[in-house]
Image (tube, rainbow, N blue to C red; front, side):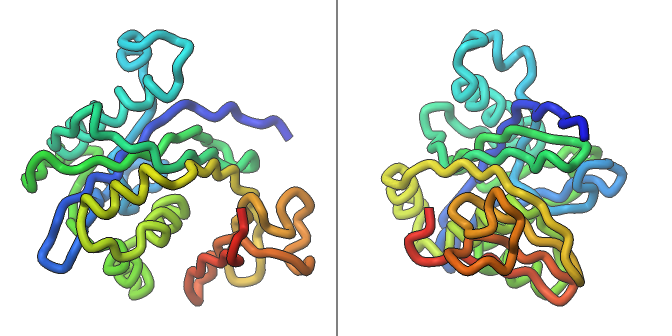
Length: 227
């Protein structure tokens, strides 16, 4: 099998303080798009030549920061400041899919609550607490890609933006390079630290770090201390 190269990309998790605690901005991709069409995601997209031109070709994270700021404005009409971006994680699409991205995820506070989507690539938006977004997904109200689902799970229920950003600055930035396996009733992506990682034996005893994506429901499973 020929492995498709992963294209550099950036995603920005825009956060604000809401009445019930910290909320994140989710935007809905147009159903016409071939990559996660109709799904609810964080604003983001490819790193393009404009982003690399500002920082040079030897600093992929700096270029991704430029892309995160640009995409937040282009997709959602929200200004985020370069210096406010907090690196949260890195996601590389599994090798056995036809379209792949190497995406840096950042957190950033919103400069204002106003959102302006373009009505073309992005058709709608919602501010939701992370756990409320997961609940909406479980009810079938919104569709979430796996990286978005896992990121929302990791965010949990922070009381404020300051609390969330402080915790994010102190955490180790994880790199997710999922292995995708199809199982009865759906699929399972296995992440670093899982006993099945690198061998595909989903029933091998040992630590668990995986996302079950079945028609009966999704479940992120991670053993305590699994890294």
